[in-house]
Amino acid sequence: LRTYIGFLKEEIEGAEDYLRFAAMAKTDDAAGAAMAVKLAEVELQHAKDWHDLIVQEIEKQKRILAERGQEAPPMMLESWKYEHAEYVEKVSKLKHMAEMLKN
Image 1 (cartoon, rainbow, N blue to C red):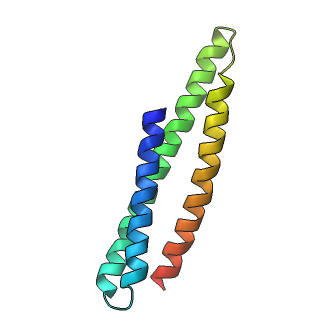
Image 2 (image 1 turned 180 degrees about the vertical axis):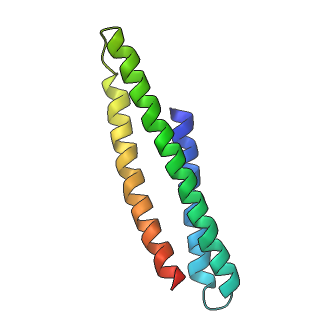
Image 3 (image 1 turned 60 degrees about the vertical axis):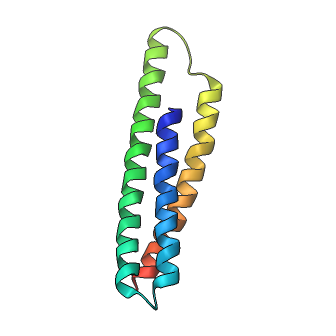
């Protein structure tokens, strides 16, 4: 899961970079800014794809452990709870920023 979370964060960072560029370039380079917004949205979709895979893997692990009469490690669940909250907050802000930069 750590690797998947790392990939998710990289996609979010990529979207942030594109949107920062778009914000700076909007008045001087409309075409470049528009391309950056488009690519940021692609990065956000990639982040969502990683997010969905992480959720599937956690559910799979919980199922496997339940079949063995065990519970998922609390640290794993707490770690994901934190990462998920961070993901939701950042993605929400980035989507809002992308929409603002489109106009």
